Length: 67
Image (cartoon, rainbow, N blue to C red; front, side, top):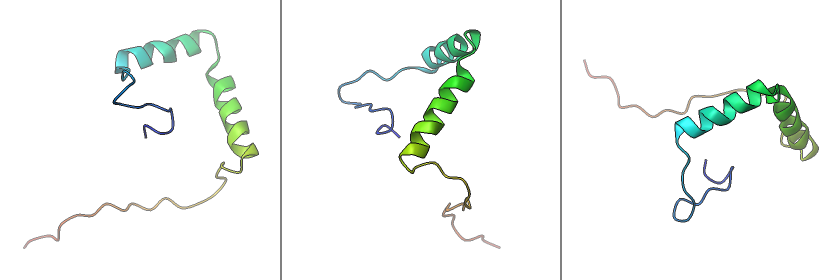
């Protein structure tokens, strides 16, 4: 997860939830949420990384049930 935004925990400060929430509200006030999402989708599509169909499989490993 750190690789996607380019965060290095040994060098970069980790933003807290409040800072991220302020950023989200800033985008919403300026009506930029959809524009940002569309720009990211376009970039992913151009690079062949946008999934249009698929199947999500839960790969959770749990211990066997005991009776």
